[in-house]
Amino acid sequence: MQEFMKIHPKDNVAVALCPLEAGRRVTVDSTEILLSEDIPQGHKFALSPIEPGGQVVKYGSPIGFTTEAVAAGDWVHTHNLRTGLGKMLSYTYDPHFSPLAPSKPVYFQGFRRADGRAGVRNNIWIIPTVGCVNNVAAAIERQAQQFLTEHIDEISAFSHPYGCSQMGDDQEYTRRILADLINHPNAGGVLVLGLGCENTNIDELKKYTGDYDKQRVRFLVCQESEDEISDALAIVRELAAYAGQFCREPIPCSELVIGMKCGGSDGLSGITANPVVGAFSDILISKGGTTILTEVPEMFGAETQLMNRCMTEEVFQKTVDLINDFKEYFISHNQTIYENPSPGNKKGGISTLEDKSLGCTQKSGSAPVRGVLSYGEPIHEKGLHLLSAPGNDLVASTALAASGAHIVLFTTGRGTPFACPVPTMKISTNSALYSRKSNWIDFNCGTMVDGTPPARLAEQLFDKVILTASGEKVKSEEAGFHDLAIFKQGVTL
Image 1: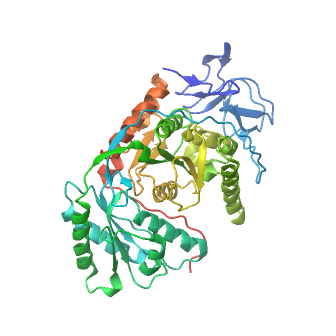
Image 2 (image 1 turned 30 degrees about the vertical axis):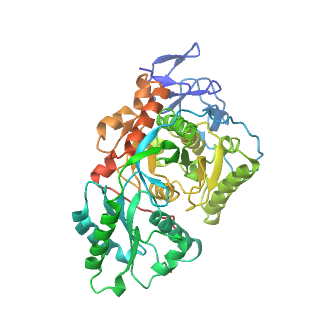
Image 3 (image 1 turned 180 degrees about the vertical axis):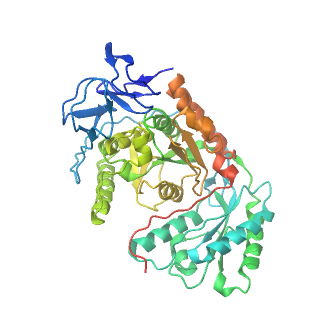
């Protein structure tokens, strides 16, 4: 078992892959180092002396500056390390990328919709236009389970607190996300449940959905119905009959769209799970598929690595705007841009936002960045894309689904049970989490520490995604979990 790792030749810290006790002697690059204190798993120790204010380098890039003198073998963490990031920056396009070589096509068993798009689930979705009808939607979901058949994967209602008393971008975001989900190909049938007096009423929402299949999408206004639950159940029965006509068939994985997100990260996230997801992304893109990376605040400090992989100067400029617009969002609310790592992140070994971001962006692999999506914008071409959304797990994962992700890959060092509207596959960074929370975690990248090659794990993850796209349920689906969260901006009336 490998006990520690120097990630990049330029690094002046190494990461403990298991707990290392004080007094232990380790050899790195032929130099023996005495550990002066206990180093928890996922945490860093210095490989050489670093003066106060000296640069700490991990992943081959700076992750901050020391606040005091650090000796070789010392623990390097929040007590002696600060961020080196400022506020607004200027960027220059300096492209460094190579297109991925095409690889052999692979097929999954999916659903071909009437409009030609592919889905990986044949679900019936009940989508409220406003939070006032959440309980009605939940009651419909419970009673509608009678319509499940072997051809219908799930009948789910997605509650949310929005749809009224909103203004400006806040209202716009709600309408975009709801319209995106109504149009999502994982849903074989959709009941849009309105109240009748809300700002985002059904007539307004239809302006955002565009043309739709009237057999697949149905609408009900509760204020216009004497018995909204009875009427809704009659509609769901008809939607189930329509959706039940679809059967799984071979579809090339070039039509798959996979979202990539991390949460509850630890010091192993950027070493195990995130690089494996990045290698998976490269495999899928080499086969003509699409991946989407989001959580913009967790790109701060690593953004130039993405900018220099932009296919064109236009995409580069959109990436610059993506980063700076999010910084302006923080500044406009009088919030600190770089105080991102959570208490759980810090406990797991992440010290600064640069540390977190350089690990987070490992999920993007090596493919060129082909496009940048605004919040709520559907995907419209293949390859690697960046999506504007915050780091919040539920909000960002919902945004990935709304932009067209069939499945979301969610790496985690601490674990979480949540699920967004599409299958949300949990990938552990360490084997202890995988063993402890087998009811949450779908795939374990912690075996890399025991010697499993990253390339093999990436191939295994690709196979797991194909199985999931073909109908194998992830743990959160088996538990019946599904969540919807929309980016809140602006005042509530």
